[in-house]
Image 1 (cartoon, rainbow, N blue to C red):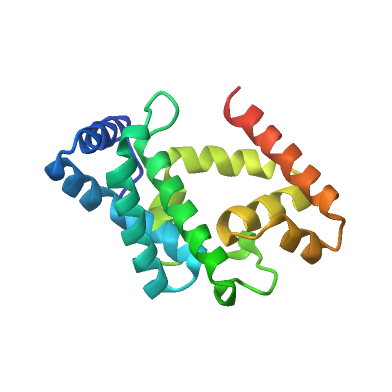
Image 2: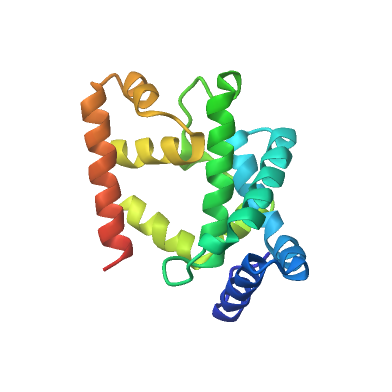
Length: 186
């Protein structure tokens, strides 16, 4: 799926709103247009294609049930859908501690050489803005936020990895998120 244009963004918003009204055709079209990108999110978090497929299915069940909570004034359909998929993947990781990455992951070094859903998501205008704002954070804040977001790590896990007190980790992430909010919403 190429980067989302304003026209495509508006169409996805409409499809999600029609899904909220119980329109099965709109839901099928929404799935067709967004599932590759959401699958990329799931694979990135889960690091396991089979698990990512299950998480994607759970995410779309949630989309069908909760589409009425979507508000285009707060976020685009793509952002809302990616958040649902990401949260489902993190929930799955938390339920299955055996799947969590037990080692430090260098998210800055993750490279996807082949164009695909993850590549398309990274080319999205919203992702580019987020990436630019993330680059303005201190390295430890950026790393902690990425590990929490992409890896589903808890505050305790992050504090242990960084060898800092729990309160320090919470402060780093809180300050980082406040900085991101200010950067993304000038």
